[in-house]
Length: 215
Image (cartoon, rainbow, N blue to C red; front, side, top):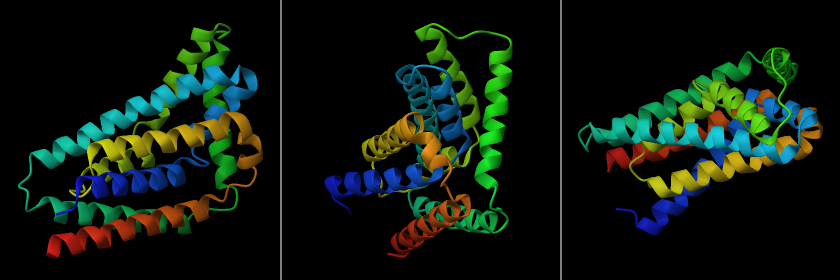
């Protein structure tokens, strides 16, 4: 059995890497970027990060809740199946992504922000925070980052504290990049490469989980 410290460090590093790769160039990344161009960056960061933190808590709760109702012997096999399946899905999706995939994400994000701001002005600090929170929260639901977090929570070797800390660190890092250097990064994002890296990472998680299931 893994030591608690090792479990926490593995969970932190795995979730930090997985979330960072999944969020770079994602729709919520471009939403934060666009909002930060129009409004004070610090308020956009607060709202966007709060939304991502809320979805992270929901996702971890779902993953741990699902894991808790299953027999202990089944959990490693479930984690292996979810990791391998998700990794293969990301690799297959990467094959269908074109060179303009990041631009398409940015255009969709801008359209959502424009629609939200067409009917109401968000001038106050709380107004900007609320706008960023609502838009990012809705966009994050059902996103690949949410599924990644849920699947990570099913792994028996990962501690809740480590996953929470790593996920929040990843979201905080990418959101800070989006509001401060998002335009520069957005022009250089290779969605296909990020999907492939994410897919490879989850295949590696799956192989580790499969090894644990076989022990």
